[in-house]
Image (cartoon, rainbow, N blue to C red):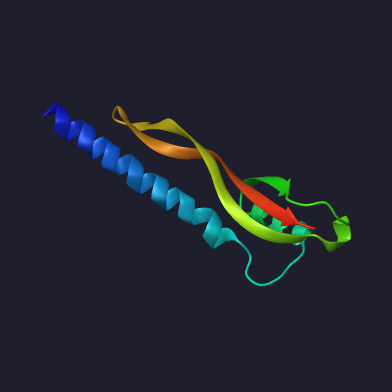
Length: 99
């Protein structure tokens, strides 16, 4: 019984991680846009954005090279009757910029 519970929890964590990683990719703006527009759009969707500059060059010539998922901070929230639910407190996304 103990092994079943551990297996179930592990499977749930793997599925949750896979679903969590799909969020930033879906949140990424489509088509070419400026770095500032991309960052603003992601922040408007509730993401904490960390920009990583991959190369040196003029800031005016920077373009988004990749958007990668980061860590989500989740807390347990009471919902009544002794039960709890998970609530996302913050979510991070990494924006790689090439100039």
